[in-house]
Amino acid sequence: MKRRKIIYLLLTILCVAGISLYFLYYVVTEDWREPVIYVPSDVLELSISDGRAKILEDVTAYDNRNGDVTGSIVLEKIKALKNDGSAKAVLAAFDRNGNVTKAERSIRYTDYRSPKISVTAPLLFKEETVYNLLDCVTAEDVIDGDISDRVKVTILEAEHAASQPGEFKVRFRVTNSLGDTVYLDAPVLVYSADSYNGSVELTQYMVRLKKGARFDPEGYFKAFRGGARIYDMTDEELQLEIDQAVNTGEPGVYAVTYTAVRGDYTGCSRLLAVVEE
Image 1 (cartoon, rainbow, N blue to C red):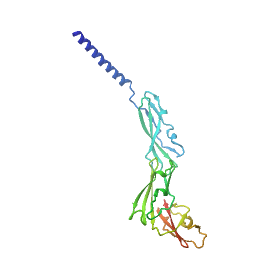
Image 2: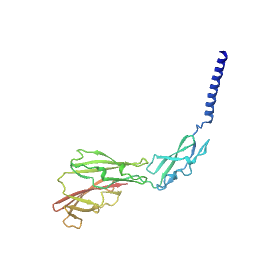
Image 3: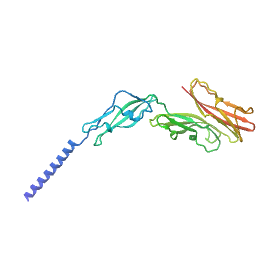
Image 4: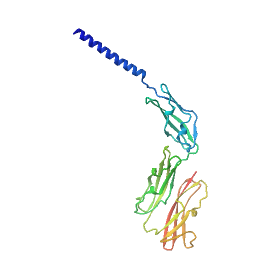
């Protein structure tokens, strides 16, 4: 019996020693350290047409066990974009054991421009009709291209229901993949059902003007449709009235209203004039 106890004790000691040696080996041999990424300290200037691969140029990574792991570096995201096109590129590197490290690189797009929201149809609707304001706008970005599907709209001011005659203000907004968000505040006009029986067509429904630029609203009138006939400015009986108070000396969004009359037909349309610095 005593001999058996001694054998059990020895086996226990051997098991504990074996487990201890295993954990010691695991601790000593297991790779716990992440790679190190070496990023140039100067700001990388690039064009939006360069592609993201250029951001990885001259960036290297080294691991204490696997050596050079530069080939594992990936661009995870670009963040903290500013109006001057500067941003932070977040890079990540991996070793063979799955250890990950991250670093940031300062970049600046020399030809970056914020997204642009454009109005492509008049923000003018007949009362008690169903309309979608997002059908009247598009958005373009130098990085992402067409981002019209990302445009959102919020009603800012409305003293009446949006389907009842009157004017109210809305705000369109869109954000690109770099987190740059732009806004466009615009007036929307709802007219009574018996106001117009014709329609006015313009060459465009939004114009961007530099501060102090000359503005000729009549130049955006294209045609008037009354019944089955279409009339332009060469028609002597066409009466065109343009209601506008665009001040190109003051940045802002202005509504220009066109009202055309020809015989028994009357039509209306609207142009947004955006004056920028």
